[in-house]
Length: 560
Image (cartoon, rainbow, N blue to C red; front, side, top):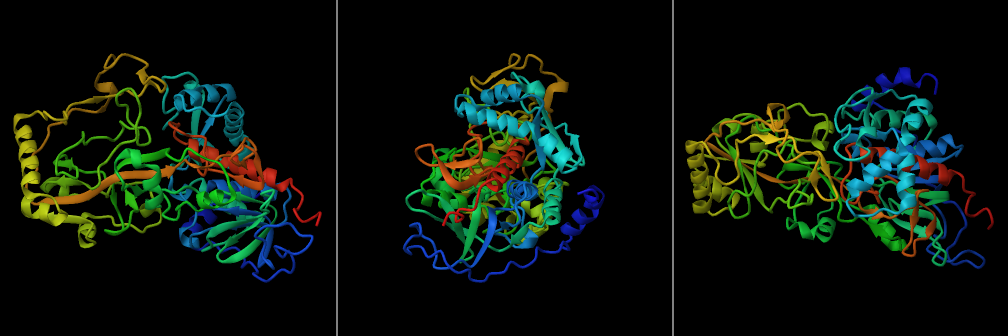
C-alpha cells in the first residue's frame, strides 16, 4: 500500500480512458459435492455441484461493494469475489456518477441528534442509529489513515441544514478535493485491484442459495451459475431507481408514475428480489433522493436523464393538461428533491407527462451545455450534449407554431396556446400572477424537520445576500418553439433489506439471517431527510462493517 497514493493519479486517468486491466478471468469449473438433498447434507436449494466458489461474495461494485471487498481482503480473506451486473466500462453503480461527497460528522452524539431531527418522526432503532453514527464518523480514519486517501473539506452541504441541533458538527469532504468525476470510486477501485479482489462483470445475481430451515446462506446464482460463498454474501447491489414497475408499486402516492434515473440504469432492484425470496424484512421502500426536473439524455425511450440548465428565461413547465403547475426556478430551493410545503417536506411531484416549453432564446442555447461533474450520461459519455443532438434524436421537439408543437407532443393545441398567451400577457404586465416567477427567492433552508419551522422568521433576514434566486425580468415565449419532456430525476432509492448495526440482514422477526449482509443504499437508514454525502458515507461504513464481519466467520461447510 506504500506507493498507492503516488500511483493513483495515473491509474484513475487510465481507468477513465478504459485502459484499466480487468480482473483475471474467474474459473467457472464444476466443484464436486454439496448436493441439495443428499443424505446428511442440509436441506435447501443447493446445487448438485458448484460452478465456482469464493470465501466472500460481494454483489455490487459501487462504494458499498468496493468497501466491503477491500475490508474483507484487509481482514485476511484470501478470495473475495465481487459481482458486477454492468460491463466493465459502465461499472461502478451510482457512486461512479455521483458527487462522490462524504458526510463525516465530528461527533457521534451530534450526528445522532442531527439525523434524528432529519428523520422527523420516522424512527430508526436506537442501536442502529448509534452504529450508523459511529460508522460514518470512523470513515475519516479508515479512508485517510488506512487507505491513504487525501480527504479535503467541501463547502457544499457542510451542513446542508445548519439551523438544527448538531448541524455545526456535520462536515463534508471530497477525495483530493474533487467534486464528482468518480473521485472516490476510482481510488476504491484501484485499492480493490491492488488487493487482488476478483471481479466478474456482466454478471447479474438473481437468487440466494440457502438452508430452507435455518435460512443460512451458502451462495447464490449469478449469471446462471451456482457460486459458493464459503463465509458469506454481501448484498451491495444498490436500489431500484431504474425499475419503472417497482417504482410504480412503491411511489404511487406521489401521483406521478414516471420518473427518470440520474444514477446507474443497472439498479433495477435485484437485491430486493433476493431479499424477498429468503424472507428478509424490507424498509424505507418509499424513500427517495432526487434532483429536480430532469430530461432524457440518451433516447426518447431511455429513462437515463440529465439535469437541464436553461441559458435563458423564456420557458415554462406545463403538466399533462397543458397548463403551468409550478414555479419553474427550483435550483437551490430543494433538498434532494424535497421542498417545504404545508409544514412537511414532500418529494417534488412532476405530473406524467410534463414538458418544458421553450421560446426562441432558450431553445437556441444548449440546455445541457453547462459543465457538470456527475450524472450517468455525462461521466459515462452516453448522453447527448447539444440541443441539435437532442432534436436529431427525437428527444427535443421544435416547431414554428405552438399549435404544431402541441400536436407533436400530444397536447390539446387550444389549451397549450392559451397557456402560452396567458404567460406572455403576464410578461407584458411584468408580473406572473400565477406563480410569481421573476420574484426573488430567499434562503429559507434553516429548518426543523419535525415541524418544518425555520431558524428565523419567514423572510426575516431576506436581502440580496440571502437570495437564492435574484429577481429577474420575465420574458415572453416566442417562435420558434421547443419542447422536451421533464420528470423527477431520481438520484437513488433508499429502500431494501433492513439490517442491524453489524450490517446483518434481518428477517421478519428481527433476527439476523446467517451469513447474509447488506451495505449502501440497499436498506439505508434514511427514511425521510438526510444530509448531502450521507448516502456515500453510509455506503463506505456499512460496506466496511459487512466485509469485516463476513471475514470473521468460519466456512459454513467446515462442520460438514
